[in-house]
Amino acid sequence: MDNKKCLFEKFGGDQQVSELIDQFYYKVLFDKLLRDKFLKADMSRVRYQQKRFFSQMMGDKNTQYTGRDLVEVHKGLNITNQQFDKFKAHLKNIAKDMEVSVADQEELLDHVEKYRETIVFNKAA
Image (cartoon, rainbow, N blue to C red; front, side, top):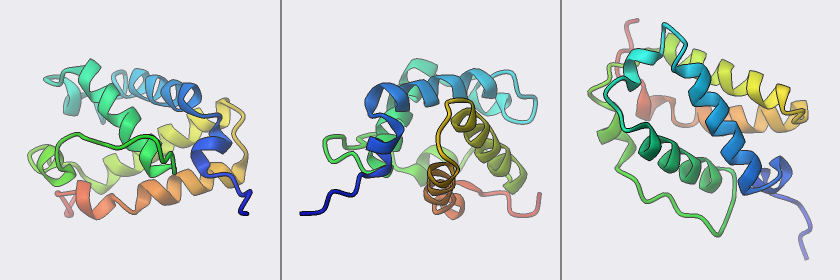
């Protein structure tokens, strides 16, 4: 029997992942580099879908992301590598503030990094 916890469980489950995402979007909406990407978005829907996506990405077997295809969601946003890096920096800082271990912070960022090619469409910037 494998007793190794998935990242979702190590973070503390649904409540902690929800807190991570809520804090993340609070920071993003005040970040000059990122906020324009969300001005026209239904933030309640974005938060809901992001929580489901992160829960699944972090290993929660009871949650399935049911939102739109990630390419479709991001292709018109012209996201740059710099913006993606800032996205990751916010996640890392929030996880640190939540007293998540360094190893779990790195695991989270490794999971997120796997989606760079799917989300970043403006490779020149």
